[in-house]
Amino acid sequence: MKMFENNKVFILGLARSGYQAAKYLIARGNEVILNDGKEESKLDQDQIKELRDLGVKLIFGSHPDDILDESFDYLIKNPGVPIDHKYVLKARELGIEVINEVEMAFRLLPEGVKLIGITGTNGKTTTTTLTYNIMKEAFGDKVFLAGNIGFPLCSILPDVKSGDIIVMEVSCQQLENLTKFRPDVAVMTNLSPAHIDFLKSFENYKRVKAKLFQNQTEKDIAILNIDNDDVMNETKNIKSTTKYFSSKKEINGCYVKDNAIYYYGDKVITRDQIFIAGMHNVENCMAAIMVVKEFGVSNDIICKVISEFRGVEHRLEYVDTVNDVRFYNDTEATNIKCTQIALSSFDQPITIFLGGLERGQDFHELTPYMKNVSNIIAIGQCRDRVAEYGKELGIPTYVYEFLKDGFSKSVEVTKPNGIILLSPASASWDQYKECEVRGAEFKKKVEELKNEN
Image (cartoon, rainbow, N blue to C red; front, side, top):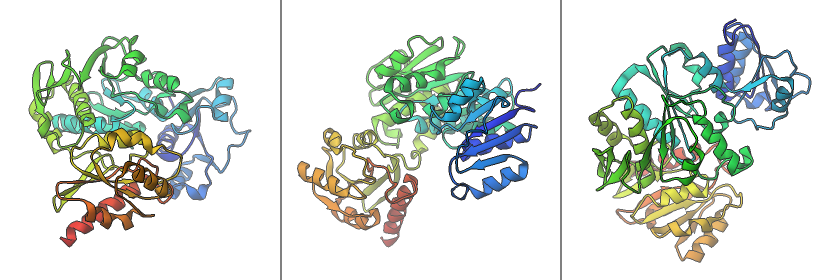
């Protein structure tokens, strides 16, 4: 029997990956039951209609005790479903293999496909996007983008053939249920505490992240941030051929020297050619350079793509310059760590939008990074705590419930050559469905300002 044909498969969780997995499996003669605890009315109606029409059995609104039994061959878990969900525990009791859409798609890839897997706590989306853009420029239609960046791996299965290259962002939630997945080139950008609510401890989070390398052999490449102790400790026993990058010292690998990035002694690109701000983005560029050099990409192509790259949308994204003030949209900075990174990326005076959902975040952790902040616009549910914090620091702070109301004040108080930065260190759910909506509103206000001038 061919793999994933004429099996009985239980899919836990709809979203993009559950939807794509169900479509792929039902087309190959599998019996597919998909369960999602959300009410049907709150899910994508077009997806639901399509899956029903294809013959997928759908169960919404709860997780009934009697629908998972030993008759199933696989349980395919959406990455966002908790690792201790009752169906996951029951499947293990029954001897049903628990995998996810990434693992399923990997097992179905044609031979001869080259797979690049990129993970890390911060920078993985930027590194993945940069790597993909460079590879696409070099190799054209042979290159595909997939993974946590929004494109389920199984959605590209019908188009991928031997000799193609897949660039893939891999999250810890995806790594948790990978068993045979093996990238030809694997990248770890960095490690710091994150997703402890999902993986229960930092130790477990690091262990799961290191699973990216678990099936690699000496024929495969691991690209690692040598400056990050947790990365080095977690990867010390991997079998891969290891290569390193550093933003702090000259090493046998990729490094920064004389304000330029070098690859094994060869100068690749100067820092003033890199538009995206901050040393963390220099590190992301180095990781991408190391990947594409494994495929023989020229410095000319690398320089062209990196110098034109304006950042991933909503992640310290350069929006525009109006009246000699630069605007950056970092709405994805929903925690203190991301805002620390954003603040350390600029030497100019900053007006920062801080605040959003109240979840007890300690803004005092920003203090060592606030030296260039001239003004604070306090917004959202926790705006009064932000205002107290600004008062403690002696930084002029202006309080508004909504971003749109504080925007004109941010323009008024920011002098030429300054930065206006949306990097709230807070989630957006107090006012927005998702943080991207907050970022889109900020960008719209910048556009309106530009049109007025």
